[in-house]
Amino acid sequence: MKVKASENSEHSFVDVSVIIPTYRDWKRLNLCLLGLKKQTFSSSKFEIIVVNNDPLDPVPDFVETKGCKILEEKKPGSYAARNTGMKVAKGEIYAFTDSDCIPDPNWLKEGVKKMENSMVSRVGGKIKLFCPEKGSHFAFIYEKYLAFQQERNVKVFQKSVTGNFFAKRYLFELYGGFDEELMSGGDFFWNLRLSKHGEKIAFADKAVINHPSRLSLSEIATKKKRTASGYYKETYSKFNLGKKIIVLTKRLMPPINRINHIVFASTKDYVQVLIIRWYVESIGVLHLIKLQLASIRNKKN
Image: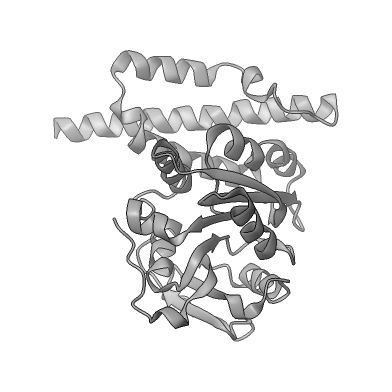
């Protein structure tokens, strides 16, 4: 799906459009918006577009929406919401973050600066994790080391999450928007596709977004099911039976090799992360099997 730009006259364009999908998350969105109001990047050079992914849940009065465009997208999923935001965006650069994120004051300035200095069309910024009030220690430890390996993802795998991501407008007009059928992983698949086309990406260490860890391990397991669904649709379903069995077997092995590149603060942290990662991978394997069995049943019917 190509994302067409708004048909505003050229003089109405700004440098950056900040696009934020939200779903029943007004309190945390408000913190995000307050962070954007503190940006050192000139307020005349960027706009803020919030896309409410639940039109039946109106914006509360306490949310600081002054100067923001508030849109609605009833189709479930953050990627559908982001595509909706891009349709009215005026910026030559799109800056993506999430409603639960708090940007550092220099976020926009450093992201744009990195894009200009590195002469790239995409930039992934740094994501700092913090443990929210009443958050699980185990969920925080796990995500601290594994959730947002943004620098490695950008530099090694040429991909970025949309929690802290900058991309030039023309990319979406040329290559299309995010896959709206995916509930998770759509940002990775979109970035991988563009990297195959030769579009360059850089990591911006000083463009910082602060992101809360999830409140519990059950939330992490739920996310794993979402990413497994995306992986199934884009990749796993296309494998032959032998390849599928090999993938499942590898994922059920103790994930030592998958964390050996990480520098842990202590042996305790290492053991905790290893066990939790094993548990999370097992959840993903079971979900892949469930999806495969459902596909077989559907074909028989």
